[in-house]
Image: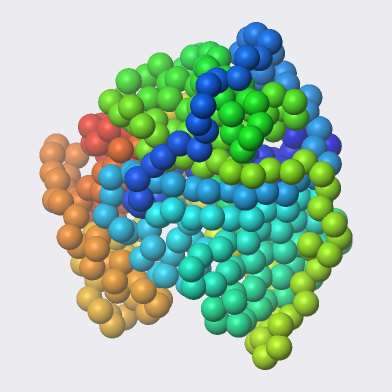
Amino acid sequence: MTVMKNRSVLRWLVPVTAGVAVIGGGAAVGTFAAGADPALPPRSAAQLLEDLRTSRLDGLSGTVVQRADLGLPPIAALAGRAAGNGLAGLVSGTHTLRVWYAGEERQRVALVDTLGEQDVLRNGRDVWTWNSRENTATHRTLPAGATDRESMPATPADAADRALEAIDPTTAVTVGRTATVAGRDAYELVLTPRDKTSLVHQVRIALDAKEHVPLRFQVLADGQDEPALQVAFTQVDFRTPADDQFRFNPPPGVKVTEASADERPGPAAGRSDKPDADRPDVRTVGTGWTTVVVAKLDQPAAAAGGAKPGAPGGAKPGADALAGVLGDLPKVNGDWGSGKLLSGKLFSVLLTDDGRVLAGLVTPERLYQVAKG
């Protein structure tokens, strides 16, 4: 299997979180590698990209740690609860995941914390999700020929292909320093946006020197010396995991729910893979790193945090708490109108009083410009 040609492999195995989405703040970012940089034969940026395109991966298991310091209020966890999705909490704080991969039809990811574990497993057409804290499980059977893109949840690797797709004239691609990640020698590929209205200063991808698989993904915000976001393997094994890693045996007393094939577990639940052209209320403005996503909401007041607890139409669990946080955002106005602004180190989100949401890896000024147009 060719890694670069398979979006599902990138989503599961490249440790990255980037893209135009509302993502929340968390703990301080540290580095995983220590000691002197390894001495490796020189490789150009073009050679590293070719290594990615031609690499093949049959199996992998390992431990991934995500850390974020995005300069935001703790809004992401509330958003996850409002969506009824515990794994959505991956977008904030520090998290440890165990991952296993043995081909497109055998995959597993486990989110481990002090209070329990949440797993998503695919074994053939069977997909299981399990929450140890609640001792609940959901099972669904995929249609014949379904791919893991249709079934498995997004991990922090979900946006890796977006970052690589950004390699165009708007992006400078260079080679960084060599590094040691998870005990393995690695080259570093550096993507630098040329447009200064982007809040992203650099994206750094550490590639395994032998297997050519990304081991670490860092995003540096403009004006910052430390990564605002870092997701990396701390331990990795490129042997194919045993079959029993992908079998789910419900523990005693577990409550099992059978879901329809159309229901997608994990963070991808409710997500549409249809292009924006099929969704007239969502469009994009611009290209590359300064792309702005513009969406029209049905309830402008709720978007700005004005929904009242218990008000008609606002019945999702956690939605009232989320609306309360949004209501505390700073008010902004200009010749484009008025609204509220959520801004962090890597992105900005504008919620206008007329019911629009504008988001991008850009400065607030860029959002105001789009909102005016």
